[in-house]
Image (cartoon, rainbow, N blue to C red; front, side, top):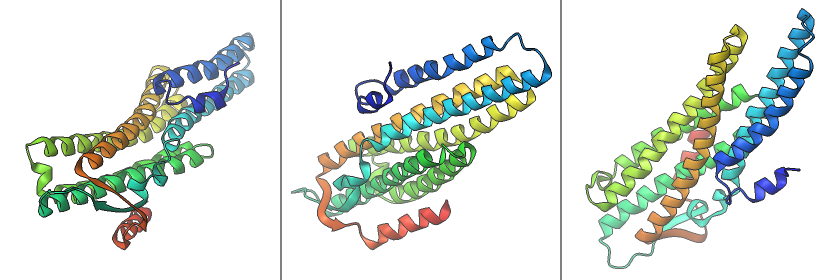
Length: 263
């Protein structure tokens, strides 16, 4: 018997795509079996019941996709790591003060963005069990607001336009953040499209939208984890770390509140 608890513990050992596929098969199989079992019943009332049953199973399946993806993010405990939890400071020796100041501001901006994405994953994890439509819509707004602030903060630093190695690494992180924003929009749109297609009886469009939803949710989790790893490496190379036992500055707390109000 496949154990969900075991899967959660091994999320780093298996690609998220494989986990989604396994759970997709596990959840889809009962639905198919149920529909085949009730196939001889062709009365309108029975057909309506079958359609309602299928919709219920599909909602449970898409909720499981989101649960697996958000738990993969939550299992990294981003909010507890010094880079995201404490005030950042530079430990670099010999670097020009102006350059290190820019680096500090850039790492701080990305850390704040990832922190909010992590909080967004936690919120989606709680909401998706009750109202998936509202959960994806809220996630889209949250990621959009965080991404806009990230761009303003990072692009304000001349180092972000540097054609050298530092600039390339910053551009790579910005591209990941932009992709994450697009996937948040895709998730929300795909959920609405698959529901509308189901109501209209458009089965090909319905299946296509559900595939897009699954892919967007999966890829979002993988990008968050990749951004976390890339930023951790960048901060280490630049000699930037969280100052233990010193919480983030009031300006960052104010930005956090602004993100919350924008939701």
